[in-house]
Length: 586
View (cartoon, helix red, strand yellow):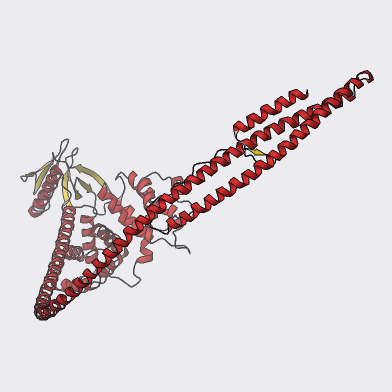
């Protein structure tokens, strides 16, 4: 089925490439519809126009080439072909589509019918690649077959000249060039048109219609037992017989298979050159015109039966396949030979390059050796001079090292002296830090005392405000209570005066505490300045000691008049004294 598909594709390719293109360079959908419908008709395949419409929509991927039409052709037409169609009618339909456009307009020595048969033979013998061509070997095979059918001698030297001229320009001929070659009469000189036409028809019958042998013979009837002349046509699996050679009135078939056999019969009943064809269901008696024809037919039928038993293709198809395999083998061998030649050439070039490289390396090595010898002598002289200079330089370096050692010893002594000074400064700095710490403690004591005074003052003020509120409430009382309240007011005013005096006393004490705080602050600033001066002195040295910083400060007590400077104990004593005075005044 694969071989049949390839044969069909070749004829369809000719028909497709002959279709007209529109302005955009595409084949119109209407032409594809006509081609597809005609193909389905001649191949006896049901036509599905809807599938064509769905396959080729109006887009950029339309039927612009054979590649665009091939998927549809394979899926909807070729895969459905069963082989029950007329090959000649199929080829004639494809020929009709392409012949008018491609056939040469110059007069030929062959008719259009003969040109059609040559075109079909071309499709059979051409290579399985597109665009289709027929190679010189197949051209020679075809011309030999036609020449033999004409009964003429083959002009090998003439074809060799033609083959050389052909190989220099191209790989092979197209179908139309082959038709021009045969129609020109170049290889059929001296033959009339009828002889050439009969030779082409004979080759066509053999290669295309698989006609292995044909001719007139007598056949004995099965019912009447009479002898009638029939035109017999032997094909790979059947013998058909007709009334005449025009093949219009077919009388019957002899189906051949591996079980059939053919036997020669003796002459009898006035009939000569008899032979018998035995099949499973029938036996056929046939009479040839002479012994030679009899022997040829027996041999041809027996050969056909043997091929059927072996499952082999017809001789001309098998020969074509062998020629193709031989060409492929020769091509592969030629490619392999060319590859080996390229490899040898590349290897030779590599060897030449390697030898040239080795020669250059040897020359370079000799030059380098001479140069190195010259450099060695020069280096030896330079080394001697350098050795003398190195000795002098070493003496000078040694003297400098001794001077540096003496200088380092002096610097070490100075360094040790500086360390001792820094240790002394460290002791003095510790004493200054101790003074600063003591001053901070005194400052903290004063702050606590101020805080206690502030608390007493706040309590006294709250008490005075309370008395003032009570006085206001007393004023609003009845007239009878007013006198008594007045007396109490006077007493409270007296107590208030006493409290004011105590407040003034506290203010004086606060001022004294502030003065003490200022003195302590000055001491702290003096100690801080001393500490800073020590820090600066230490910073100028090499960081051999680490400064001791004072600890964190405690929270300060703050009054309305500034930071407090009383201790907790002093504040508690003042609070007790105020409470006693308050109780006395009440």
